[in-house]
Length: 343
Image (cartoon, rainbow, N blue to C red):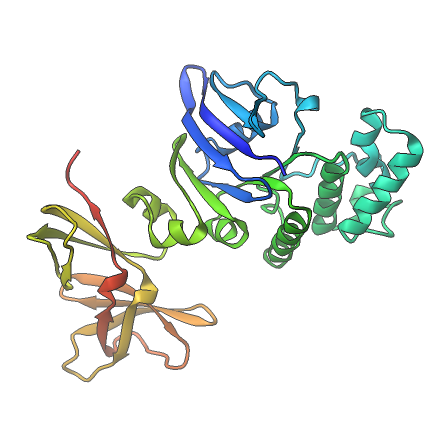
C-alpha cells in the first residue's frame, strides 16, 4: 500500500503549460479520482506519475521516496489505458504473463501467478482465448490481470471504462472497485465522468485547465464545491440564481436567505433540482410547468414564473404535464453561495 505524494509538479508542451504546479496526496490503499473535462491535463499527469513523461518541475514520492528519476520499469507503478493494448497475436495467458516474462520470472512461477490473476478477475478458463474472441469487459479484466501480475505498488487507470456500453461499464466499475478494495491497492483513476468518480472514489481531485481546484471526499466535493467553477463542472442539472448579500442576508428573486458569514456584494446561489419541490397548485399558483423529462426513477420539470426558470426533480408518483400550474418551494438551507462580479 504505497502512499503517493505529488508535489509542485508542472509540465509544458511547446511553451504551453499543461500541468500547473500541482500538489496532492493519496493515502495507501485509497482510490483517488483525477476528475476533469477533456484537455484538463489528467492523462498527462497520470503519465508523469507512471514515469512515461518527465515533469519540468516538481517531485513525486512513493512512500516518501522521490521517484521522478526512477525509470519506469523500477518505479512500481503500472498504467492501464482505455484501449486495453492487449497483444492480438497472444493468448490471454500469454498476455497476462508478458510483464512477468520481461522481468525474467521463471516459467513455473509465471504459470502460478497467471493462474492466480485469472482467478482473481474471474477469467479462469479463458487462458487459450485470443483478444478478438473476448468481449470488451473481458478484455478489460485481462488488462487488469496483466497489470496486477507484476505486483505493482501503484495502479493507474486512464479512463478504463469509456469504451464499454453503459450496462457493462457499470458492472466493470463495481468489479474494479471491489477488486481494488480487496487488494488494498493504491489507485489513481482518470475520468471525466463525475458520476463515475463519485461512485468509485475514496477521494476526488478536481482538475480543470491544468490546476487542482479541489481535493476532498465525494461528499465534500458534491455538497461543498470549492468554487462556482467546480460546481458548474459537477453535473449538468443545477439552478443558478443571481442575487446580492447585504447585512448578512442574500436577496434574490426566490426570496431571502440568511448568509451571516458572507460579505456584502453580488453572489450566485447554486440550487440542485432535488432541493426544489413542487406540489399541485390551482389556477392562482405562481409557477407553470413548461417542460417534462422522464428519467425512470425520477422526473425533471422545468418550471417558469415571471422571467425566472427553475429545474426541479421529483419522484414519479405524480406526473405533471406542460401548462399545469404548480406551487414551488426551495430548501434554501441546501443552497451554496458563491461571490461573483469581483476579481
